[in-house]
Amino acid sequence: MVAVIKSSSSISNALYYNENKVKQKVADLIHSSGFVKDTELLTLNDKLKYFKKLTQLNQQTKLNSVHISLNFDPSEKISIETLRQIADTYMDRIGFGNQPYLVYQHNDSGHPHIHIVTTNIQRKGKRISMQNIGRNQSEKARKEIEIEFKLVQADTHKLKQAYQLNAFNSQKVLYGKSDTKRSITNVLDVVLVKYKYSSLAELNAVLQGYNMVADHGSKDSRTYKNDGLVYRILNDKNEKIGVPIKASAIYNNPGMKFLTQKFVQNKPLKQPFMVRPKNAIDHYFLQNKTPSLTALISALQKERIQVVVRKNDQGVIYGMTYVDHQNKCVFNGSDLGKLYSSNAILERCNHKQDIGKEQSFKPDNKITEHIEHKNPKTSERQLSSPEHSNSTDNNFLQELMKTSHEGSLATELLAENRKKKKRKLRQS
Image 1 (cartoon, rainbow, N blue to C red):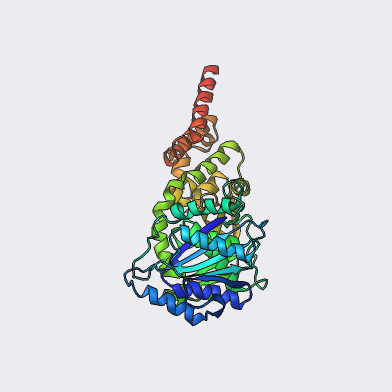
Image 2: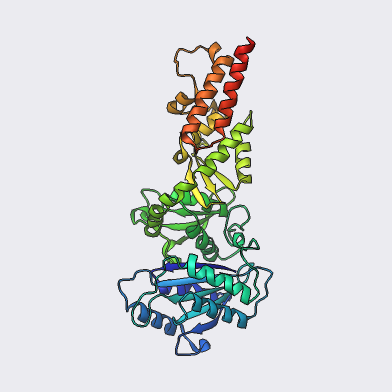
């Protein structure tokens, strides 16, 4: 079993999300607790009125809505009565046993799961702390419930990975194949919470893997001027198609205000994970004497690192973003260091771009200074000589070591180059 807990400032959004699923006949309200009426007699007004009555008792707490999903292995066939018991047991053990809550069974995905809607404001107005509840109370309850109800254990089975969306094995949003809003919401439910991104471009690098884009509009558009945001579906050519879905129409309103807060929160959180994509790139270049951009992208994909290449209208590459699906982190190439920017990567791959007529790619002068010999008077003959080649490689690798993590594979190759040079000198 995998438990996902989300807090927000709108209990109505969480409630409407599940009620809309019921209207679409892809979910059922199977249980309730803490309400005066029986489950089958509760109206939408009854549910909303009682939740809002509680949240109004504590005006200082902004994040007063709690939305939980309990996910089970696709092989499990769990009866509705057992799902009710699991929900009650789970809520009691995370400290929400006395809170009013609603339990919805969803039937719109490939695995059994339930959603629970509640509030962390108690009847006397006191707030239930949500700090570390997922890591502490929820994790303990999950393990106990797996044993008691004989469920597939997330630790021993690769169940956790099954619900961590990634661009390699998750179903893309396909226009016309399913409800647009529901499909977009399903992707956002995981991506916005699980991934660490610090800009709209980085978020879109992840969403692009699902044929989606978060569109802030052009600077002259009404959407941009009003600080609005819409989510759109992309076709196989990355062209926007279909009707855009406003962020405000999605239950937790993931608009620019929400995303801006996430950008600030995520920036320091992803810094410790920078070394993995850097070392993966270093490793590829150390292992390949004739590297190519296509082969690099393929090699990184095997390491669950997706390379999103950004091109202008003329098809010229101007940027690269790395999505580490293992650590759920997104990095712009230049943020990893000068040697991982699009200019440097293209130069290291000896990559040529088509700009109207065939023209070879020209990297930034600053990058070139770190790769080529520093003497501006170096002749063409010297540039092709073994001595100069060794100097170039060493300068390049020294720079690589400065910008990479300790223990980078570049250290080994630099030492090897020095040994070869010494052997050549002795032989001569």
